[in-house]
Length: 232
Image (cartoon, one colour):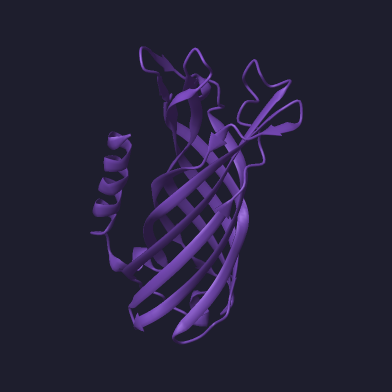
């Protein structure tokens, strides 16, 4: 996982030395992601897992179609997963320990969105909607730490190597200066595919990972809004 993060940071650092025009309408962001897994057996939803927090890093480039419409692809690294609750009891059935097993699922996500914005010289709100592809690059099963024994969970070994869904992104671009913006962006990312579709459980178990993330960043932005630079 550390290796993957370092690789992404290295790419961003190297990229920052390329000629400025290459970065026209490019944004970098980092933030917090909350991963919430829905789980069902024979179409009956169970409250087995709790949401898990993580971080994300992403880069996006905006292709302007007009003052208010654009296409905006994102490429990012996202730490997802879930927390699994267990209870340890004694011979009398009394709870003696609450256990939280953390399962880690790290993804590279590719998102293509159509964006509509309210064009304003200072504050520009926008909304982006589009499909999302997730590629699993790292996984780690949670450990169930009972008093006298530790048991490794198995869910991370059962999820598919890739999944797909949608992304709904809402943001505000606050123009601090001509070439500097403060951006706040939130995203809801529901899964469409079943994470267990390639496992032996696929006929009676379903699992989907729905995430919410929020990021804020201040970056130099080279944004040319001249009509000659719109996509035609």
